[in-house]
Amino acid sequence: MGSDSKHIITALQRLAMFWRANQWHVAKELALNPTQCEVLTRVAAKSERAVDLADALGISQASLSDSVAALDRKGLVRRRRDPDDGRARMIEATRAGTSLTERMPEAPVAIQEAIAGLAEDDRAGLLRCLALIIRSLQEAEAIPVQQMCFTCRHFCPHVHADPARPHHCVFVDAAFGDGGLRLDCPDHETATEEEAHLQPGALGCRGGSRAPG
Ligand code: SF4
Image 1 (cartoon, rainbow, N blue to C red):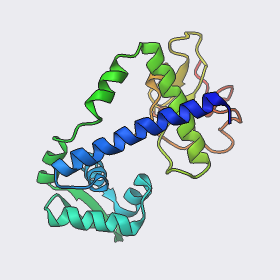
Image 2: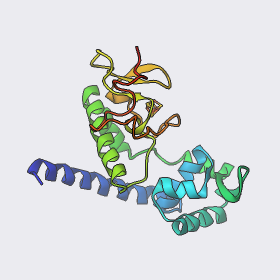
Image 3: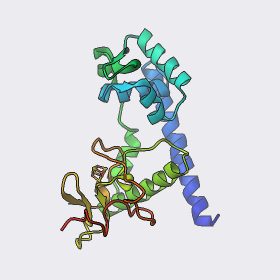
């Protein structure tokens, strides 16, 4: 591994340590643990099937059951039958659970301020690099699949001449730049092997029949 790669890994470790410590601090204030906070945040945004929730969070069904049971005892979530599959259970936040998530910061304030202080181009470049790392981890099956542009059939990278907005989303029929890359898009549809190109970040319709005119 090159020294620049080592420096990047050290930087990521520092950020991860800071983030984890902050998660424990926030969770403790709310009498929860970090996993319970993640479960609650997710189901407060949208109720989800238990099996999908465990996959999305990268935790086992047993661990999810423990967290849901603890949240249920506190009156923060409830389980109900999935109308589309009688054997499956949906997890949803109660009103108390939803209101508790409003007290959870989206991210540590210090990180938010540090990111906001970056130049726009640096933020876009950072997002692109992080998205590529996440995509590699997904392909190695090291992390759960995210609904990101790089794996979406609607993503057309580098099809426009404008260097500020070179990519195109077919779904919304709009051009966008690296700063607009999505990591958790509800409109995402996974590209098939045929739609995906070999080079990292070049998926979807580049050069194909779905390229925007
Ligand atoms: S639908 Fe969402 S994930 Fe897909 S290209 Fe458009 S913005 Fe990206």
